[in-house]
Length: 535
Image 1 (cartoon, rainbow, N blue to C red):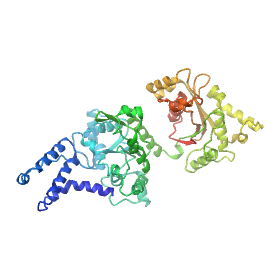
Image 2: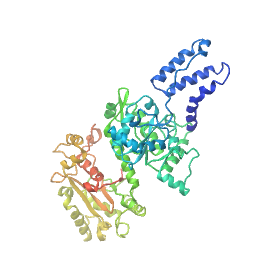
Image 3: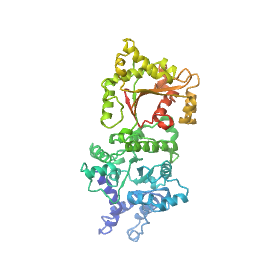
Image 4: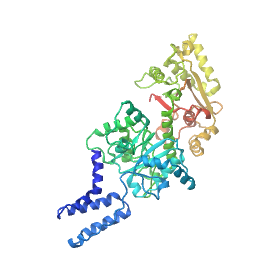
């Protein structure tokens, strides 16, 4: 039914022209209404003026109406592609023609002449679905978004649409490497509406409009039908689909104070998630009657898109994965626990499945003595206050000492560590000691200022050594790093945890996630994905 809505909008463009061949007065009012709506649908200041003039002139007597000359219609295509370097040119009407222009030498020469920073030709190509009304009303944020994405190493394919035809763009004008291969192998088939000579291959799709992919703001007339359609479209494309846009119902100060509210959260989060959208990023909001972007949020979006694409392009054997276990409250045997979940067995099954899929899990799967229980027991040792206080240099020794005690029958130590090699499958401790100065280098001065204000020098929070360093630790197995989720706040201060308005994470919490994120060349884990077990 969304195709019918799209077709109806096209009919509104040609309806008045066809009605001029219908004789008699009966079609006169219908023709006037269609002509009026055509101006309204095209939008823009000049078209609104022309629409009001048409309505005024239609109220004149019959003789005057017969000699009425319609104002010129300023036409914006229903679908088009824009770019800051083309603001003085016509809209391109297909992704293929846009990419031909975008990758041409003349375009790069024009960019150099205007000192416009372009992404390299081999950068990820990302389709960006934009709201046509915002193009017509000349909202500056559209060109700002494209400019920032180009500067940050992403080639945007910015397609503006009315809203209801988002699925037709994905279906008819976009494709992907996976979809092309699936069609060649006979695993899926193209819809008859697919336009090969106008389509382009992309690495991801970002929808800035929100709402469901099928139907957009118009929704779905037949309940449930849209989910099946969107599921097939996104499954065949098999690329990251992200809904990320500015808030159209909230100002930036209101958003920063209260978060995403009411209907806006439904548009950006709830409805798109039903389709399979991931990783929503708010890009900005209202400033007066204009829409503005927050540059830091655009950087966050482009960074995530690039990481999603990099993950997909990395062979499984080279992918680096972090696994987090739940461990709250600390020091009471809560490490590796979860409601209605056998964490040790689940951890074993995950590692076995990763091995089957080609990931590097070291010797864990091949070692008959390895077990999830041993991994949990070793992580529990790393979480002990005395071990953290001693620092990272003695952590491997602390685990080895527990293994030795288990082998001689020490009942205060987990018996599973008495297995050969501690049952750890050849895994070793991998940890890092992070100073406050080191943390500032990776999170930046602005964020570090917030951290220091919330956690002054005499109240650094948990996970700090006797030397005042932030301790991050875990177990390394091949390319898999297993750790315990850092504590969010202070165990004995639940009111602060629940009600403090700006609960800036404590320094060790920030250090743990930055250590996971940082590339190995920068001293981190370089994790490309995180799997969390537990609450």
